[in-house]
Structures are given as C-alpha cells and as structure tokens.
Amino acid sequence: MSEIKLNVIKPSVNNLTVRVFLRAAGLEFSEHDVFGQTRQAEFLARNPAHLTPMIEETGLPRGALWESCAIMQYLCNKHGLEEFYPTDPARRAMIDSAMFYLIGTFYPYLARATYPLLGFPQYPGEVGHSDADAPSKEAARMAAVEAIAEPLSVFQSFYIGDQPFIGGNKPSIADIRFACTLEFLAVIDYPLPDWAKKYMANMEETLGAAYSEPAADVRGYISYVRSKAA
Image (cartoon, rainbow, N blue to C red; front, side):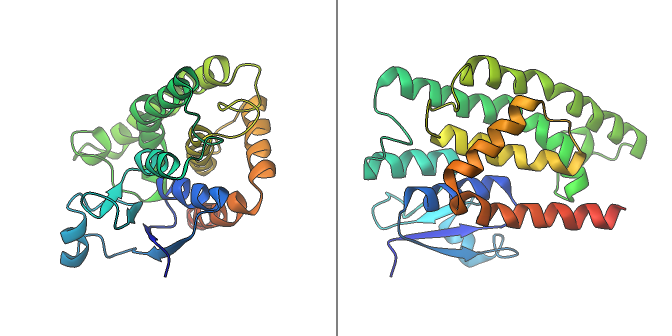
C-alpha cells in the first residue's frame, strides 16, 4: 500500500498541481477521487477545511495536509527533491515568491474570471456570490479578465526572464503550479501571449505524461463546459 494517499477533485487546477507533481517526482502514491464527499462527516473529521487536494500520510502531525503549494514543499523537503525545490536560499526564495504571488494576486483574478463559466461557486463577499443582477456580475467578471494581464506579465518579466522556466533550465514546483493554473484560461478563450503558449508547450514536453495525463481531466471538463454553452 502506498504511503501517500492523495484525495482529489479532478476538474480542479489546484488538484491538478499535485497530481502532476507526484507523477513528475516519481513518488509512490494512491489517488482517490472525492468529488461530492468533502462535506461528509468522515472527510471533515480528517479535513475540517473540506479542501482538496489533500494528502494523508502517517508522518504528518495531523495525518493530513491540504494546499497544493504546501504539499509540494513538504514532499520536496522530505524526499530531498532538489530539482523541483532547490535548497539554495536565493533560488528557493524566488520559487516561494512566485507561488505566493500566484496564490495571493494572480489566482484571485483568474478565479473571478473563470469560475462563473466553469460552474464553480465564488467566494462570499464578492460580486459573483452576491444577489447582484446578471449584468453587474458579468461586469465584475470582465474586470477580473482585464486584470489578468498585469500579473501574467510579471511572471514573464520577473520570475522567468530569459530562462525556460521559473526554476531555470528545469521546471520547479512553482512552474507546475503556474502552468496548471493557466489551464483554466482556456474556458474564457483568453489570448495567451506567445511566450506563455511556448512556456506551456515546454512544460508539457518536459514533463511528458506526468503532465498531459492528469491535465486531460481538466481539459475534458473545460471542453464539456464549452459544449454546454455553445
């Protein structure tokens, strides 16, 4: 039996991140689809935040860990995966910064822009979650779409620069988180700049089936959503 139990909801890019990472890192794990189960008592007893992805492992203080970046950081530290998460303080700081910038700035814009079309619930306190009329919600969504361009350009100019990846010549955990996040932009036909298209192609070519196989679940869901809207 695998030491790492991974609980996922497959259409999610947050879940895709850890699904790709575990495959790319070559770690032994078992994967469990918990769609429709995260609010059940058994799941909540292990994970009161009802979030995925979540790993379960005996070495963890509470037996479980969620948040995609934290999971990757933990497993890299535990297994000495230097190629994905370098121990050099300066290089690691850039990877941490890229992930935190994604989670804190880029992803909120992306969620507001894509979640309404994906059929995902938005967060309390936001226009999309309120009782505002449809035109107001769409105006808020479009404002988020327009806001994506700035943080996206920051990844190119600051975090990637003249390197192939944030991690340099090879993908890091920040690259996996970033590339997986970009997958959701397909649902809104977002015009990715040429550098981002090349970056995504390089990620998939470099990681191979470790990326493309789990990414097929997200892409399939996006295709389904788009077909329903047509």
